Image (tube, rainbow, N blue to C red):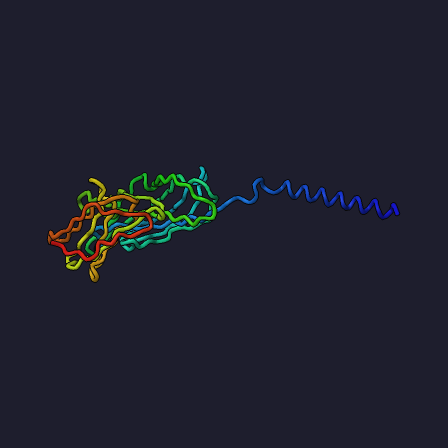
Length: 258
């Protein structure tokens, strides 16, 4: 009988030891919590045919660790992504935690004016990395969308002799905490542009659709804004104290420029 009991006891002891080892190998607290981070690109209008930016890398800093979202060159026409339209430039599953910065490396750039393409001089800072401070917590299981909003009109400078320089003006904001202002310009045949102002600062702008007259001032942080619209003939419209709430759109209705 002992010949059967002893091997049986030894097998139980061995199984217990293996179970203990497996438990010790599991990380404390279980599997790490994760979320999804989407990086979206949008643009405010500029008086150009196209603004072509080639990004060589896009990365994000989460809890002091850099995560790469784009590591092969990609050329984007900024002016193709206006009036609330966005381009997904990267999506990654990340550890839940604090998002500190997003870094954009610009390889080269060109601007097209009246059908002619010009080289855009890229400052050294853009080549080594434009760092956008975010400082936002990303909870576990969230799908977190960060909007990178270029201002084309202020990002391209003409320096003379047919030379242009890129001086990027970019906002970075979580999409979930923004709202928008919309409207329709009845007499919008002369390229009206709408501006959202907070005090003396222009937060964003929108070129009205040439066929429908509609515009959208998108990705505005919650707050109160002044809306100013003007076209190439000098006609305009101003509406003060326009409230914006996160996740909502404030519609100004039909607008006649005077």
